[in-house]
Structure formats: structure tokens, C-alpha cells
Image (cartoon, rainbow, N blue to C red; front, side, top):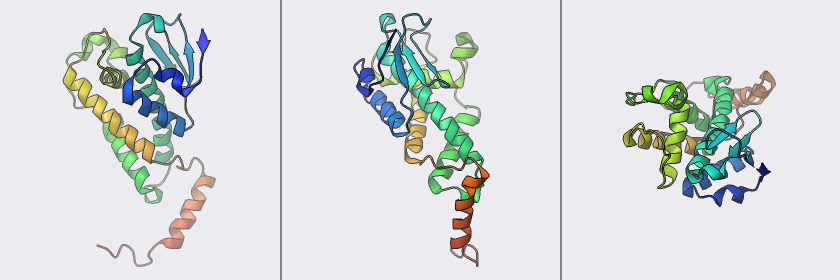
Length: 204
């Protein structure tokens, strides 16, 4: 196994602008994963959110597709943490960016998808899960070379890839400042009380 933490080490395999975007977001958020070339993994690649390790097997091929796939998993892990942090913040103390991220995350990640799922039964519980379908869609539309697997349909992949891009944009724009503890909430509460209009919302 060979390890390479450099940002450019991933880009050399391809993945296009989508991979560059994913890597830029991960670097900005301080979540750039450790990259390991592992020739023992059963699939094309894997991502471990607990160790923040991204493993790929270049010998299996489809690297330009699997890298955006796994990088999307890494971004999803960061978005999950942000969602939890915002969830623990009273709605009236959330910033406009946090509100936008929270609302869209609930719509696209929490609520059941309204996309056709007739083909997912043949994919199994793992491949047919929302997280895997989303990551496969991102990988499939990152380059012109798609995974050599049973597709769920181009319309489903295209929609899920677009939804993932929308969430990445919101995630990238939202600062990682959501309170994690009661002590973290105190400054926001003080600021809210300081600038609150005593007559309420007079703009209505």
C-alpha cells in the first residue's frame, strides 16, 4: 500500500472539475482525507469517515469515476456533522446560510426521495441505498467513463448528481460555526438579545 496526502495526487487520475471541486471543499473544511493506494480492497475504492481515509485500487480501473464517488462520501460526512450542529441550534439563532443548508439537507438527504426506485431492488440494500446511489451518480457524471455496473437509469443519476452539487454549494458557503455546546450558544444568544427589535418584526 502506498500513501499520498497531496491534493494533486488524486487529480492525476482524472475525475474532472467535479473531483477538483470536491477536493477544494474538503481542503477548505479541513477534511482532506488521507489517500491510500490499497490493492487488497474488494471494490474500486472505499472511504472510512471515522479514520478519514480514502482507499483506491488503481489496478482495478474506473479510478476517474471511483475517486469522485469516494470524495463525495467524504463531503457527505462533513455535511452530516454540520447538519447535526445546526439541528442543535434553535432556529431563531441560525444564520441565513445555516437555515438554507438545514432546509435543503432535510429535503434532499433526510426526506424519502421521490425519484423512481424500481431498478434499485436488483442492486441490493447497499448499492441501492441513497448514499451509494448519490455517490455513484456523482462518479458517473464526473467523467465520460461510467462504472461498469448495472445502472439505475441516466435520469436518476443525473438528478441525484445535480442534487449533490446543490448541497455541496450550500455546504461550501456555510461556515462551520454552528454551536456544539450550551457554552457555544451563549454568544449567539447575547448577540440576538442585543440586536433584537423590541417591537418585533416591523417589516411585515
